[in-house]
Image 1 (tube, rainbow, N blue to C red):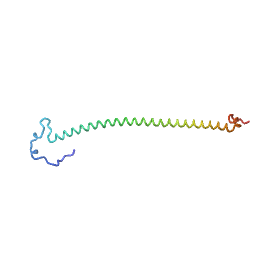
Image 2 (cartoon, rainbow, N blue to C red; image 1 turned 180 degrees about the vertical axis):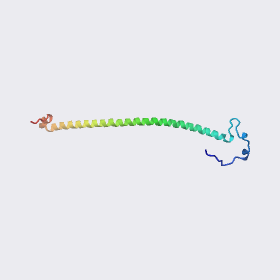
Image 3 (cartoon, rainbow, N blue to C red; image 1 turned 90 degrees about the vertical axis):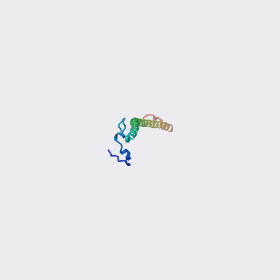
Image 4 (tube, one colour; image 1 turned 90 degrees about the horizontal axis):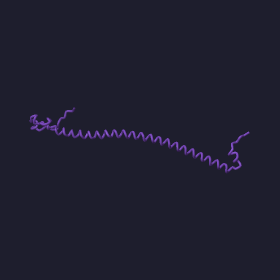
Length: 123
C-alpha cells in the first residue's frame, strides 16, 4: 500500500496533543481520519449500489443474448420458408404459362390439334 505523504504538515498544536486527545473515546478512531472513514463508507455504499446495477446488467445481457439467438433462428427459418414459397410460386407460374401456351398453340394450329393432344406413336 502506498504511503501517503501529506502536502501540509499538521498544525503544531495538534502534533503536541496526547494520543488520547486525538482519539474518539467511544470508537477509538482518530479524529484525524474519522471524516475520511465516513467518506469511504459513503463511497462503499455507492459502489455497492453500482455493483447491483451491473449485476442486473449481466443478467439482462444474458437474456438479451438468448433473445437475439432465438430471433436469429426464427429469421433463418422465415428465410427458408420464404424461399420455399417463392419456389412454389415460380413453379406454379411456369406451369400456368405452359398450360396457356399449350392452349394458344391448339388455337393457332387447329389441324395439329389431334397430334398435340394425343401422343405420337410412330409405326
